[in-house]
Amino acid sequence: MTTPAASPWWSPERHADRRPFLIARNRITRAVREWFGTRGFEEVETAALQVSPGNEAHLHAFGTEAIGHDGARSALYLHTSPEFAAKTLLAAGETKIFSLGKVWRNRERGPLHHPEFTMLEWYRVGEPYQTLMTDCGDLLKLAAETAGTTSFAFRGMTCDPFAEPERLTLAQAFEAMAGIDLLATVATDGSTDREALAAAARAAGIRVAEDDTWADVFSRVLVEKIEPFLGQGRATVLCEYPTAEAALARPKPADARVAERFELYACGVELANAFGELTDAAEQRRRFEAEMAEKLRVYGETYPIDEDFLAALAQMPPASGSALGFDRLVMLATGAARIEQVLWTPVPEP
Image (cartoon, rainbow, N blue to C red; front, side, top):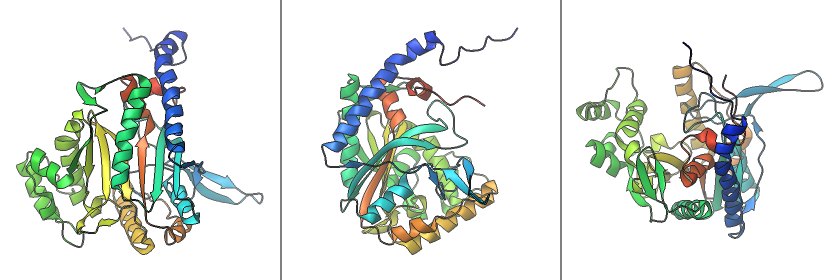
């Protein structure tokens, strides 16, 4: 006996089931564009093909190549975020911009992940990253109002999108949810104590492998003990990440152990990632090189460092920026259970 194959997404029956989600997506798209437009933002379109898709160790891109008239070939990548190009526009003189467009990430597929998805990214020059926390709360309300709902729900969790999001630091979350003093494992120069965090994680019931780095242990505690419980009842802004976990964010002036980075969660779903942007090009290069060394160690490959981006970063004014997974926001606002339900044409399964 074999299980009958599921109907393709384009079958009339399945499309009829998906269509209400898709029509709601269109309404939310229009509302988001209007929200930014009325606040003085310019919408920008960034090139999808980039010299570097990003320099995060665990980020995977789709690669291609450009062929010149002389037949010469050069590597290019579909961007995993419009971030590098958007920051270059800030260096060029733009001050309030947003992008709502497709990005691509390899090795990602599941109820909340898709190889091609839509990212909403926006930047404010001269404004603190706390302003983006307010933006995120406003966008949750906007999506709910537009979809005609008063509550988000996902996998048994509910969240009131109209309630003020709670603000929780990583140190507070590790202490409250795992019993770990996170900052005791981070030095004032941002360096980390792997053995101290590993011992604390084991005491909290987390499995730690002998070859796990501090970052591996940090990620495992976050995934197992903290993230699944965030955004219950109301959204959570999880902020002040250790600098070792914030490669594109500037250190917090009052405590260099942590950076101006936050993530937004609702119903245990990560929705947004935001920074007070790092503008020290030399420090950014150092962090990129460290990330690529880790990528080489784990995956046996690296991505180029975009020299043009680093040159622009040296001229970029102080700014804050946020990236929000638009499809996930639509999912929560419409009650969809899987990301494919809110995508007009999903990428075919391999």
